[in-house]
Amino acid sequence: MRMPRTSLLRTSCTARRAVLLVAAMLALFAVGPVHAEAFDLASLMQLLAVAPEGEVPYTEKKYSSLLAAPIVSTGTLAYRRPDTVEKITLTPRKERFRISGQELTVARNGKEYRIALSSQPLLDAFAASLRGVLAGDIAQLQAYYRISLEGGEQAWRLTMIPGDEEMTRHIERILVSGHAGRIAQIEVRESSGDRSVLQVH
Image 1 (cartoon, rainbow, N blue to C red):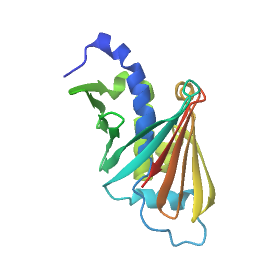
Image 2 (image 1 turned 45 degrees about the vertical axis):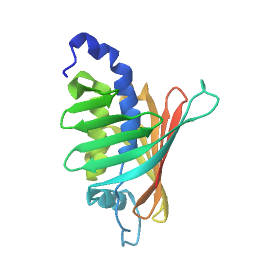
Image 3 (image 1 turned 90 degrees about the vertical axis):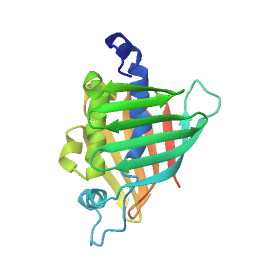
Image 4 (image 1 turned 180 degrees about the horizontal axis):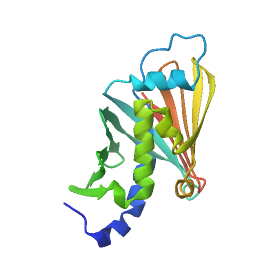
């Protein structure tokens, strides 16, 4: 079902939400440890570049100043080469966000909507940088983010701060932490002060 132009304006919140939801796909399928004397950004990107396709379960908590308690959701995350990422939420309600090629597909309540990435510059830029992480492409990431890495191979944290003014209106930073080649937690901090914390099982 192709959405009319007038409906695209009403999908801006959905697109923004998709940015935060799909952010969870950042490098979830990293593989074994890097055997090197020093663990640096290039070492981490090497792990991401050889990450396999796969699907993993997750639990996510979304915190907001408007809520007394966080919203907890569960589901699965999937990555399929060369450019497809998908987040399927099972609880508290079923919905699916899928980015493939140059299109975002949103499925909920028995209906499916398709949004061209070119119609949502924020989402388009995010999708490009997301794919840069999954591909281990440092150059592509640096086109959108200021990147820093803390810690060592057994306990590290990747910090990604948007460099684009439009993105900074929505996202303050994305923090990906883990040990060796495994992601333990992904936190998305919004410019509003809200945040989401996703744990991979």
